[in-house]
Image (cartoon, rainbow, N blue to C red):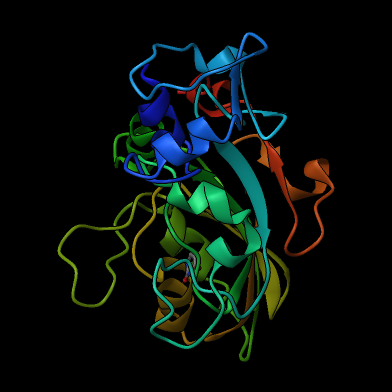
Length: 235
Ligand code: URA
């Protein structure tokens, strides 16, 4: 790719600013300075300010989303966003970095982020039934019949015409347990539990597919790169 396209693709600067970066000798290809915008370079062999270009073949990171952060790209709500937790140059990458689905502001847990539109769509598509496991606490007891109701495949959420796909409820105590979903509808866990008279008090996503937050050893706010094949090979 062209040197100026590389600088803008990976979020260093705009294509217009690229010539300044190049003239300043900040960009090396195979160890030699690239001084012309139109020069073709292999991003795997480029350094900018002495460092290799990160995530040349796509950015895939797993984040432990803390409570109180939104998954929005704008700060309209006045709350911090998950993007505030990432290096700022990643946010200027083009294509942009997006979360794979969203977690509510008051939900913590495992969130995937990527700049790979194909990966994002394949994981969020309704055809891709990847398990998402949540740990909840509620402010009222979850009734006995909820387990069967949620697993039936005929449970209808208020205002919806298509029943929820079968979901697995494991109650550890009357107000604490796990709910595993195979789809991702708006506020789905909160709406399902509220519908059986047990409003959610706290919600945390433990895992997506076979990848659990525990196995990644991430504290709230921390992230780590992951291999996308961990998810796509599960299809
Ligand atoms: N279900 C919810 O209600 N909220 C989330 O953040 C995720 C799933």
